Image 1 (cartoon, rainbow, N blue to C red):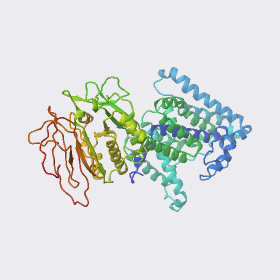
Image 2: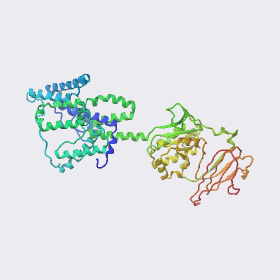
Image 3: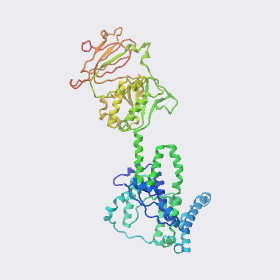
Image 4: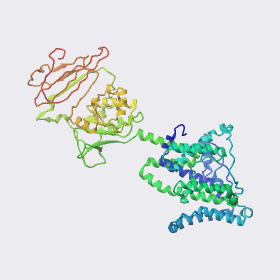
Length: 610
């Protein structure tokens, strides 16, 4: 895994998933140790749901989980069946072991531990005491108590692994590798995942020459190490040296140790894993419901299924929650914080400055992808219809220097010939169209800072939304788009249908543009039209009086019309030609209309332009 550079897989193990996995694994550890604790032969069990208590789950799991490994027995059900066979001496030793550890670690140490300059290893004292009692009373022969019996001494000889068994154990080896890595990374403080994988791989490769078990941070032993007062990795060196002494010389002394005492030590070390369940439950429920679901699903998936299958299901569920969060993210309407150029969520702040002019600032907190583009469009429409601190503007009632703007009305009419831009279906959305028009919104500013990346589908949908809102006389501006997002828009020819002038570096710049502190433009493409003007009085030098009340626009030319404000009651019209293309392929005109007051000038007197 380290050579293939898959250490990034560790990032899929979130804290909630790791905590739930450790709790579920602790239940498995307790279930495995129950037979040794009471000296009962519960059989070798495995497969999904083998920890269920009631027999009815046997049928249900056999029916629903046939795709997984089969199972025939259940630990807890077998335990209930064989309780009458419990050895009373073993039961007494187990109870004594739990009482000894509880009184020593939970009663004596908290009250009197500060009087002793070192941590008392109560587990080691229990092992010594139980071994002495078992050896003195000969519990194995007199009371049929299972003990360790033969403990081999010395190190095994090194030999090559049997590669001929690889086809038979390959699947299990992969499962063991993933579970061991997950356990290790979940129980240690990782600085660099790649080093951890190299270390595990190197140790496991060397241990294969000595027929040793795979190495990982085992839950029970790690908990036991913490319970004994270990603080640093140096404790592993001490443990290794003591274990080496036992393997080389002290093995026969531990041959009289009852197995139930080892089970007591392991189960008691799981106590901290179960004690944090109520605390974790309340904390995650209060902080995040999604993280709470990840934790709950991981616990039950690990308990009801095998460890490997539970881990796989938990990771899959965690990834699905990420997809759901991206598909249905939060969106906000922004307002200007008083005295600043910052724009924040309107619902979180009380002191803000209304910027007026029918402006709405909309932010979508997620990457724009094919999975959430429909939600984005619906959210944008909802934002337009939502009440906000902005002050709508009514163009019919605006006056400048005592002159009403309705004197300078322009009517653009004609037949659309280009199908490049998707039109808003007024028959289907007539009610929605009326609601949008009655909302008083004239400009929608899309805060693009939340778009970490976009895809091709979302870019097309963004262009469609832009033109649909333009059909409803709503000017759409974009602010704060990141460079990778702009590059993606450029590569997808987005700016062929949406002008770059609609993009601004900051929200404040877009607000200034939408508030007529910068020029407001309305663009329409792909239609042949007539531009009609209301008749005006007076005249301007070098200009043309509008005696015919209309000007005919050529079909194969591109004009730009602009209005420059002044104190006169006339209108200025400028004409600019862009590069001509083939007449058969180009049937579009570009109009930029600005409402204002001025004089009529710079217009050719040719009949064609009339």
